Length: 262
Ligand code: ADP
Ligand code: MG
Image 1 (cartoon, protein in one colour):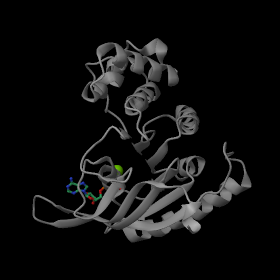
Image 2 (image 1 turned 90 degrees about the horizontal axis):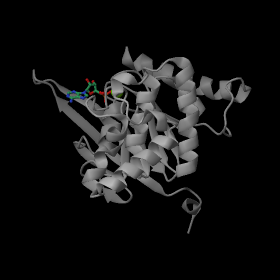
Image 3 (image 1 turned 120 degrees about the vertical axis):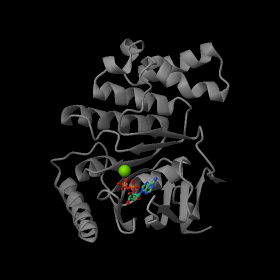
């Protein structure tokens, strides 16, 4: 019993995690150092920071694509030893298989779960409907707009019914209007599915619009500089003065992390 009883249980815990890369010329580079982060059940966390501050490395460590050099990562209380159906991942772009139509792309990960063909198809159709893409199920990626491609990528990441959604600058290449609607849709999914989301962005406004907490990172070596709470109700209004105040707090932390970068 204690104060922790009221805090949401952590679904992801990163403890003292560091990652050392050796480049081909033998140079050593700490992509991230001493990262400690809990992502609560049902929490929406954004990470922001200049290029090279270790955002992708941290996400990849949670996804199980990268093994930390030191420290540990757990998901659902289990040590992360590789990718898993409990963690869905969405990348910035080019992540769909060009030779598969939208429905087949969404189905892709389900074979490994041992689902039969009919069940895979039904699940994919359900997710495409959730993303407003039923009409595009048979289209190939080249026949989809950038926004639609990312909706398919989200549907695919959700196909295994993960508890955690990991997103690495998923909307960075999308035009501003489409991006705004994708952000609203993501918040709806987060709510409806009770997901925990870890979302990397370059965009402070996007972080303030989406996140309950914003992890501000800085490079050389990559590390967490500050974690800013954004205690605003949803849906958030960009014109709200409180939105501007949260923006200013994160911008200040971001500016400090860029000073470190230069
Ligand atoms: P961010 O996503 O914030 O831009 P990254 O996590 O991609 O940062 O990279 C952090 C640092 O680690 C950078 O200096 C990058 O060059 C280096 N790095 C990332 N991946 C590798 C790799 N596979 N091999 C060597 N260095 C890497
Ligand atoms: Mg990155």
